[in-house]
Amino acid sequence: MITISKDQMAQAEEKYRVRFHKRVRAYVRKKMPDTTRQIPDSKLLVYIARQDKVAEKQGVTTELGVTKWVCLSLGHGENFYQEPSIKKYLQTGDSPPVITKLDILVDYMQAQKKDPKVKIDTIFAKHGYHVMEN
Image 1 (spheres, helix red, strand yellow):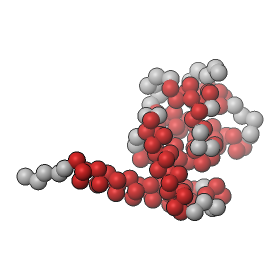
Image 2 (spheres, helix red, strand yellow):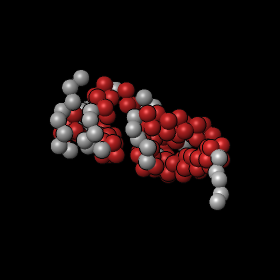
Image 3 (cartoon, one colour):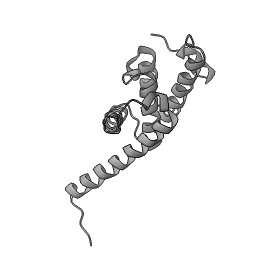
Image 4 (tube, rainbow, N blue to C red):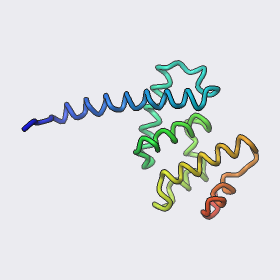
């Protein structure tokens, strides 16, 4: 039987995260070229790793979820999740699942590009969730 030490598992996890962050970097460069054009590769990797840790603290742990989180942070600023209505929305119960909450926030980001005056509460309601009060 093969025994894998905690140290070996930690090293494997670190290598995996680096590869994952590189895939996220390639994705955001392709999908958000105007936003990422001026950011050097090494700084973008550091940014992605930092946002991965922030996302994990918010309950976002899947690759898809982290990728959406990084896109949201690039589109709305790295502290987007601290805006009062977004913070409350993310912390409100387990329904809908976190990945659905991120989908709604992505819809909000896209709607805001079309109409900067759109309120996040409008997007929440469009998806059938109650209006968040500050």
